[in-house]
Image 1 (spheres, rainbow, N blue to C red):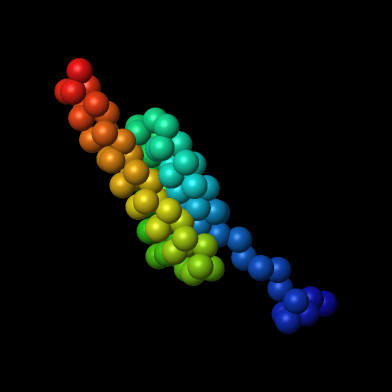
Image 2 (cartoon, rainbow, N blue to C red):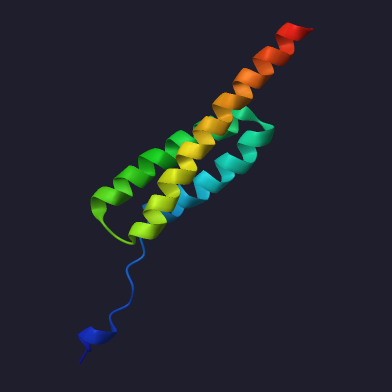
Length: 88
């Protein structure tokens, strides 16, 4: 017989992937802007999908926030590159 009090924790794959993509996008976006934008957008979409499914709210929120930060870092990288190239 199974004991319902000891049920295993439900892992939310979308939340984990959103968090990982947010981290990769934030760090990678500092060096290559396209990585930040693409990883941030995919991470944001997966974070929103994970939020609709439910699960650990902290991990989902961290994934969404880091994905937005990755998008912003990528956009700043594009702007900095454009400014640098027009100064030459």
